Length: 278
Image (cartoon, rainbow, N blue to C red; front, side, top):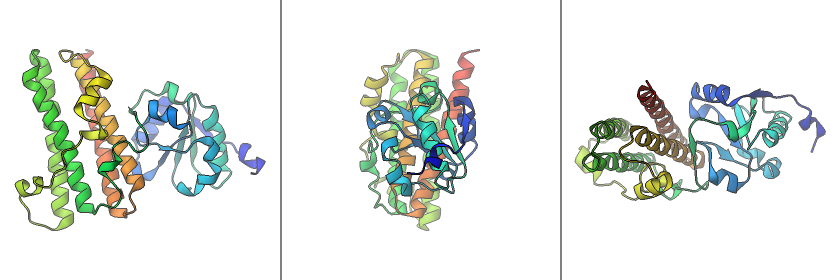
């Protein structure tokens, strides 16, 4: 190990700057690197981040693309500063350390182990199968939101669940149209849906697991939107982890694009939350 690695200056971003920086780039154009330990990652991590604990970084540099901007974080900023300096000393040109670390992060975040939900994306799927799985996940969440409409008494809460369900329908439409375009097949929506996978909602968890994890007040509009934002953050995380894992360039590209759409959903939900605060 060269001591130069620890002397190479790197840029630091606070949490807000980092969120803005990442929000202005497509997911496949950058790397978000978590250098904490696996148990820390499992408790909470920035959606779409790749976990390489600091002690393992020198042996796993080959897993990272030095040509891509790399945003590094840890718990409070100490380990990530060292990791960022190591990367800069090894030919990574655009490296940014999140000062304050995950402790100060207020953007999209996910929970769970690195392989959570990845049984849905083994990495061996064809591009067509990848889109079928993604469509299935969107359908599961749409059904969840729709099922909640008659279960809540608050009319405003019913309207929120209706809006959330409609968002998922639009995303399903986009995925189905992408399937038709990329596969070149002429297939009806009904025939396409016969291949759906009904094993989990977006993000790799079941609706019951989400409910137990967040325990929302179903009559509270802010609780409902916060739950939806948490689910979308999990979905973003799952799609990007699956993209990292896929050996097929086209599947990686499509998964990253779907992940970016989940990020757009998060922005929509954020604006919806802001309307409740005024």
